[in-house]
Length: 180
Ligand SMILES: [Cu+2]
Image (cartoon, rainbow, N blue to C red; front, side, top):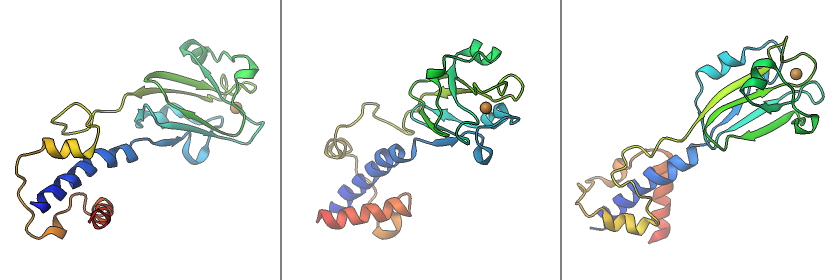
């Protein structure tokens, strides 16, 4: 009986807590090349998945480049917005707060026009939690535990049956120890 209860808690932990920890990704624009001229940012972005909550980081030597968020036309034609809209720290972090198409250009010299220093990405909304049988978010572990009344096959040798064996299992076991 007790083991069933703990097993349900373990499942809850894996399904809810872990995804929320690992969801947001930080994308270093251009990876180790950073934000610069003569780099193919379209190729860089092509195989990446940008999700709401992720972060873009533009890295460059201060004063050499800058970052402007622009619209599609501004991206196409390298239209530089007013100077006061520029990000200039050399380590500019932008949280992707909304889904949709996003465009960024460098406003220094002809870096955008001639150097191709421009980035266009598509931000998507996070996928709903996989294998969610109940779509409504559960407010607390306890309600989730009471909902799942179907008997779970009791783990015969408890320690080897923890899901997501490594970190989650260990973390959760520690939780259980405190719990008792
Ligand atoms: Cu530049």
